[in-house]
Length: 389
Image 1: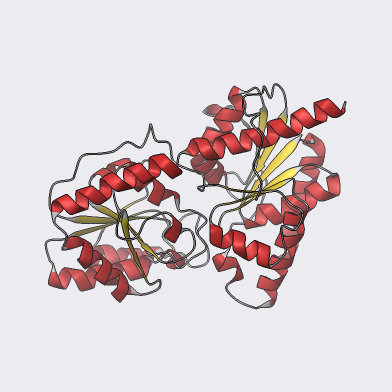
Image 2: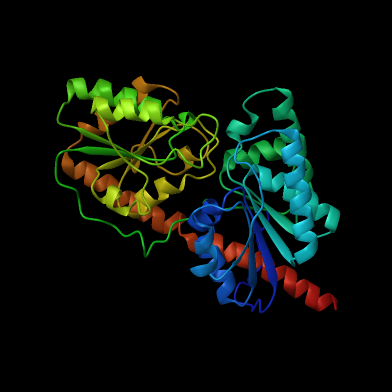
């Protein structure tokens, strides 16, 4: 794994740079700071993603150009997927950006192949491999083959945790490709600041897309178990069942949970900070496939410990016993045990874990690490092209 140069301060005036993802929401929520940084250096940023409620923010707030494309979040209809690939190739051929950043598996594959055909330099971002390669079926093997093909052709690959990096090396995806490990998209340490301890009652919050493989049902079950023994503890589930995959929790099941009353379910939020501030710990019982879960980094920046499942990405976002706890994935019992262990701690010990989490965020998880890496990637290429001319 080699390092980037130190050219992130170089001007990118009028340099067209494209970002490709399977939702505008993803680009706005997770890559907004990178878009701002590219724009501040003069780059022309083109966001290629399906239209949704956040698409206007990409243009009005961030100053990028949004180019819509029909790219399904979790669909595999071959005719629709082929049309999406052709449309994406046409868009890239028309704009011919000097550099392309791809995010999410579909964008990595479709845009990666298109960039290879058009001879455009690009970088793939591996934001979690686990769930995509969880089976040995034909689909998983095809995704693996195409992911390897596009990774080997990239100017650079960004990975978010050591487990994904090891898997890619094992599958020989990176034999000749420069690779950089990043702390996910990082966290804005000025926007997410250390918060004072929350008064009782003890509150656990889960903030995630409401889909099964995020461990939502395990959280509900664990809350029921713990409530029977510790009725004073509160549980909150914050998130939306939009922009979810095939395991999305449907409205009927959500309504039943709300009626049950064990867990407060307020719905989606544009700002997670109040929910983190009003909690004592974050819970993330994901099944896997996380690159580096941003909400865990945000919790750490707010001086809140996190209880996470022991899966790639999650396990790298906490220090077990110091900034949170890890527990076995897919187990409501293991999650309930971890929450009960945390609840049994003296208040000062819980606060100490929160302070340690903030220090960890400052040391490892600043979004500046990711932003500088992306800027430097483009600037290094621009400098090389200029020297070649």
